[in-house]
Length: 579
Image 1 (cartoon, rainbow, N blue to C red):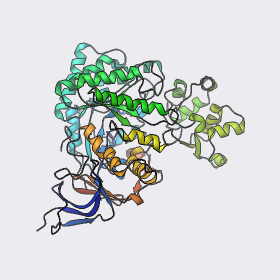
Image 2: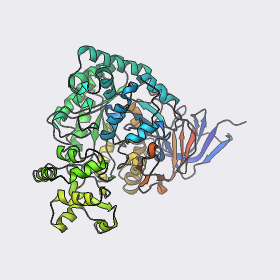
Image 3: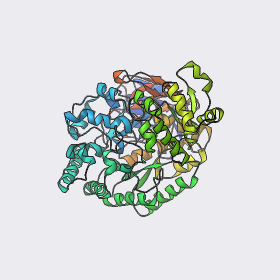
């Protein structure tokens, strides 16, 4: 008679807790780790030979936007391909509950610009078998899943429900409306939500901030006051449970200065009012200004010394973007570029040819008002990867700056002349400023910062950052030796599970749920980017798969074997992080 359901034999165990690696067998029964070591003479109907392979806890991703995609993709790929076994949805205040039937299209439209999720895909793929937030969680629980999910209460739909989607942008809520919104958050927490999330940009009405609604106006939560944010913080404080994901930039703080003192003050006040963990967005090592991330780390350490639970969400990917101007939306931080890149592809193309709009773009450029602050070289640094029409093949491999110099054009004209002539089909590579391994290791060595972030499910036509766990293991552990294997698994599993309220997950320990990755470190690969037409409604996305993972297990069942899904759906909705 078998003692266990499965045994992983002879693997090198890296348990996620910073314990030095060791070789041992691991047994699974009823979805949990039943025993580690001491298994000689014991049997199981399924034995996986893990000799020479790393056996580690599945990865935990705290920042995703799979709220829609989980309804048609049970493995939440790209993340599922890269060893992620648990994740959080509802980030940045964006989500779909509560929502009345007549507001479903409006709720989906809100995600088309700010998170660049195709509207047709959402229309065709979302089930909409809920109205309230508790009903949304019930729906998530019913959906067959190959991954574990917890959800924030996203505050945008809460405001839309109580005040109306348009009205919420015109005025601040009354006391009665605030009480009702706090009641909804409490109701959602009672049902199993993990906390609440919001993106707040008080200066967004005047322009100059990215992440906008479908029509170019601020998102609802952008307009929240600090008093409103603190009211929601007190809800969790009164409950003494849950955690908060907050992306806040105080009015007047410069572009990209997320850690400016005026912004920090609210994070500290939220932590004081709630007594709960607050995830600050984001910490990244920008090679142009090394002191920026170091100052962030000093601030987070000081918060910890004062007993404030403010933690940093790392943005530690070195990867860039592959984009066309048919759908790119990350130039929204400059109003003139936002105007040109709003609308359908034909509308965009027409605006790119408008003399007055071109004049404004050139004037802004000459005045130093330029988009893409996180792209290496900005607009000038965009590199032509592919073209839509063969007559432009000679541009392949050239940067926009190269083209401008060669053709004697203004930078704006060099870019838009090509984009328009190529019918918006030109594909550009945009490199980032966070590819220094030593600086990124500084971020990851902080006990106050988690690795990431994927934005999984969002920006699907130009980002595939769900590959970040594999990328981190290859780049920072195997290639650079900047982070130890033990420390990396702590950052990818234990610490995000701890910060995010996942109970019993993020480590390998007897009695814990068997969320496990088994892989060959020397053979790990992030495969080349590819375009796949696998979204509902015939829509496409850009993905990167992996190689080198032998097995991924969720709750004791193999969900991926050699990169291929097995069809098993053992994932759970983790109410209050438990399940």
